[in-house]
Each structure stands twice: as C-alpha cells, then as structure tokens.
Length: 388
Image (cartoon, rainbow, N blue to C red; front, side, top):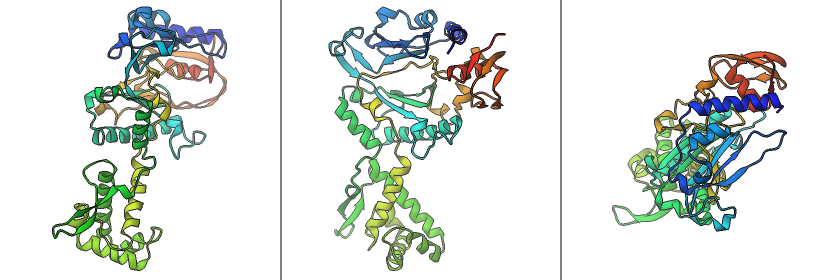
C-alpha cells in the first residue's frame, strides 16, 4: 500500500468514525483493547495491552486514531492494561465462535467467489445458532451475531454459566458442536415398551439423538411416499443393506410409523446401519465448522462491532437474529459514508468486484468507480489510489 492510498483510507476511515455510533461491549472497562494502525510498508503493528483508561471513550478514540483494525478482548480482567498476560488477573471470558468462509468443508476459495463463500458461511451460522439454542439452551439475549467485515461471522455468547470455563472445557464445547468423535452407539439406549419388553430407542429428548431422530422420521415419511420398488432401491444404496434387509426395514417403517416417531429403532436386521447412516448424514449437514482456536482461547482479541475491517473497508456489523436471513454483507455492510460519489483508482489486480450493487469486472489501469468499490479494492490490495 503506497502512501497516497494509505492516507486516503485513513482519512476516510476517520470520516466514518466521526459520524458512526460505536457501542462498547458489556464490562468494557474490564477488557483489554487493541488496534492495528495504518503504518508504512507491508507489515502491521499490533498495539494492545490497553484499557479504557488508556484509550478513553471508544468513539472518540476511533475518531482520533482511525485504526485500520480495532479489537477488544473476549476476556475480562482485574488489570486489562497489564503488559503481562499472567498478571492481568483473568476473571472470565465470553464464549466466542468464529466461522470463516474460506475454511468451510467443500468450499474451494480458488473456485468460489467471495459472495458465494459468504452466503455458504451464513448458512453455517444458522446451523450453529440452532445447536447453541436447542442443545445448550442459550437464550437469544445472551448471543450476539456479528458479520466480521471480512471472511465470515462471529457469535458471542455472554452467559454467566459458561463465562468461567477454561480452555479444556471450551474444547469440549467445540467437539460437541462439530460432533467430533460422536458416539453413534450412545445415541441409542434400551427402554421398555408398552409390553415391558426392552427395545432399542433413540435418545429423542435433546442433543444429537433428537436431531438424528428428526431426520429418521423425515426419511421414513419420504420412503412411504415412494412406491415400494423405489423405496427398496433407495434403502439398498446404504452400505451393508441388501434386498432382504431393505424389505425388512421398509416393512417396519411402512407398518409402524408411530413407532419410529416414538424413537423405536427395532427395525430388524440392518437397523443399526440405517441409524448410523442417518446420524452420519445429520452430523455432516448440521455441524458448524467453527474455528477451534478462537473458541478455546480464553484471552482472544476479537473485532469490535461497528468498526471497519481494514482488509475490506466493510463494517463489522452486529445483526439481530431476524436480520440474518436477508443480510447481504457485500451490500448491507458497505458504510453509507462511502456511497454517493466516484473516485479514481489504479487497478493492479483486474477481475470481478464482489462488493456493492453493481458487481462488474474491472480492467487493469486507472478507472472511475463508486468510492465503496475503490475502498474495497484498495483495502484488499487490488488497487492503489490514483490522482484525481
């Protein structure tokens, strides 16, 4: 980033902060604060070990310093400005989840557009929220969803029940959310039926057992809608299920739909294969590929909502739950301050532009673009500021 580009971005970030309303997190005075300033050259400098006593009112600090990136700690400390991590006096920490669009299973960053990756990431956020609500019982008021401004989303959980968890306990949370080493056999227990006979029954009360049960009921309902030949053919697509076993399973599913709904998986030979195949599909579809180091780090610095991400020029946007479905980060996270005028940039890396309303392909050289497009390109290193 050359000097002209750096000074332009720093000036416009400052204009944004002078008009923005940035709310600090709860217990802001107990948190460590950090930022990365605009500096010459390709390297970056992290300024950290600061408290509110050092930086002052958050909005005034941002307007004065105009950082390239702004952070606060998930942790709360007795002495957040202490330069030694061991002497800060750790009290507790938010439980933070990070989902990165370019780290999703099945997503190839080289072949997938920025917008497509972010759309896929949003679906993973919805899966994560479902697990956190349904399986852990976290209330909506205790969770904050934030578009990171860059590659994905953060979810902050501020529930006192988990604030004191250490890294080991948080790793167990990660393993549950990602279904790491899930005991598939443990999803089934033997319970007495109405005749007092023990039968294999899915644990339907909650957790992954409830999710597998829900999927199994839906699968059974769909099989009953098919003609018998098609249903048998689909059952035989599972490894280890031949025609005879498929007929046995299909007969039970067809004759006793209420039994399946109650969790009964005494479906004859091949039942365990069906349940395990369903469980593997459910965990593949409903686990959230969260970034483990972020969740397990009890001293993590995380991006400040409503600040600007210095690698994109987009706002780190906090979202209400009912906003998530319709949220388009490449339009809705564009600062209004950067709309309404065109600027000249010298494009070094041509190609499609993923941000804004008109996502056209740009050629190399000096071009006139909407300012938010120019800021995006400059922040990502694809262009430099040209003389007007």
